[in-house]
Length: 253
Image (cartoon, rainbow, N blue to C red; front, side, top):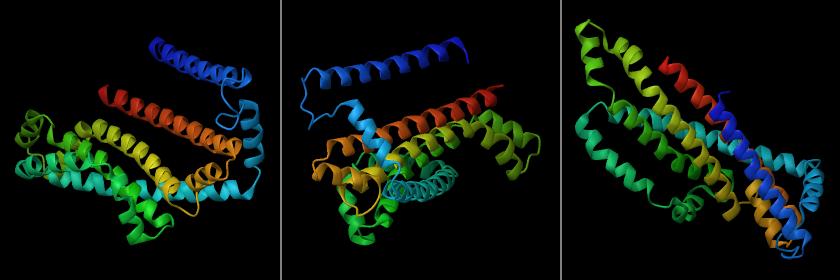
């Protein structure tokens, strides 16, 4: 780990510690009502009891399986669509602004349509997450393949490289780092949209339990679920960022 990475990790850890200290002070001083923000100790105790129940692991299994399916569909469709669109500059110039425009539309507005077609169960959240995550994957794939250095392509053609050789030895190495970035962003969006969809309308999953805890006025349970989601999201994002950085550094060597 270089000095800059070490400094980043220290700052991140310091930020988390500061937030925890602020949380403890706000609850210990009575500045915030326990119904709005329970003490960290109460949340930890509730979380410890929660992870020992079958309900917890059943909900985690449903949510993460939904995220896995949604992400696989988004990644596959996004990479394929992005690559095929870049085979024609005219189609790229037409479709890239269209996809960018659609991505700016908050798909949460369309969640009721997904529920109408797929029901209130996991299927609607899978479709919703896959649709939302498709756009960053496709757009990054388009950016990656559409901006490969033309001189590299001409050099490969001048040396008699076939289409497959050009794709394998020129296009993929050039586009791979940007595609990986799109896959990371797509995963984060997929994670957030599946959980968001479950929170808004679902009968199972982590999001459903968060919504149910709020409706039943159980702040300890509510914050325990939120803490689990936050820790999981941060850990996954750090892991994906580390993988992305390693791939990019290896590609630049």
